[in-house]
Image 1 (tube, rainbow, N blue to C red):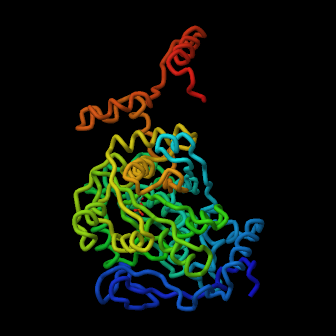
Image 2 (image 1 turned 120 degrees about the vertical axis):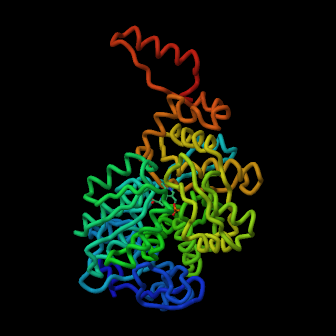
Image 3 (image 1 turned 135 degrees about the horizontal axis):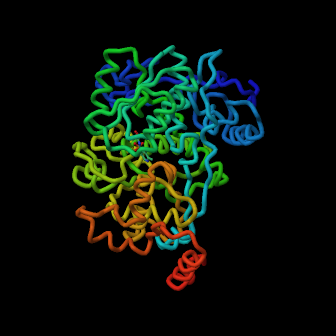
Length: 464
Ligand code: F0G
């Protein structure tokens, strides 16, 4: 095999294995549940042996091949997901991936955030820099490609907004029709508007995310519709490449900590799977600790671990302004638990005001992110205070969504309206120094100069 070829079918075969009973299958039913016990499947690669991927390439050769592909113009090579195809399930001969050149996301230094968290060095892997502005694209390119290979006309998902925007884009690119189920009034307009432009049939259900999932699970049992939520293991295979790309950006030197927001817990499961696979294949020498942060109002995983030792998960009614992670019954909690155990990571919860502050701080580094992503910085601060993260350790925050995903949140924050009338109103007074509401002025030079001078008088060293 020519390892630089752009043919994505010349890579190893994969199978599905139930994470609970171990049942192995080559094909899943439309609900992607194990027919024996109802639990989730994961993709595995029977051809992999220690230190060698199924392509027969060792770790050093894989690193070289992936690096070389960065100068290739072949569509599968310009994708930051399919570039790592030796670690992905193969499409059948003649089938091409649906790609929008996803992945390829930057790693940014966050000096102001590092200072505020009390650590020496802090970086963010910004998955919001994907084509539809969230990490979902890295999984959608793989799963949507498998949907098309299986000749589905319809693909569908329940979503808090980002999955639906991503699915709609990839379905449109792949010539499929998409059906979106979202909770009415509980997702940001930015995300909803993307689905509409990308031609999705969009249903706003009078329910929450968990209610949308329930309806979708019933639908896929009745109609020939391909499920694109993260219970679909092909999505997680694509999402795991963010960790591979990250390690490549770090010259394969593992950081000490990777911190991820937790909603339905697919992303933490995917990134953890990649870390374990990279270790098994000899691509990295040790595992970073992967920790998950939830919002206090949507914290079933945090409670499962703190109150029940991870033995069970009791669904909660979720409520947080970080709407992307407003999820009370996360599907992938068992997979995420295994990742925390394998990597010695932890779980934490953060308050609404802590999230809002962290989001503004990430913005102040010129990076920005959506509210759900900001839980990572808020969580890091707690983990530093607890001594779980040390000042001199190397830490990566995974920012999952772009700052423009939720402009309502940002505007309300800066106008000081975000917590008005809520139980957080008093605590939110601490946010005033971060707030920068726009000035409405008469159109004359004097008014603008007065604003500049007032600003300099109040914050003489802001730019420093
Ligand atoms: N961050 C963002 C921006 C998200 O959109 C999501 C999930 C998460 C974090 C949590 O990731 O579910 O893998 O633990 N959004 C979903 C959606 C559920 O429908 O867009 P997770």
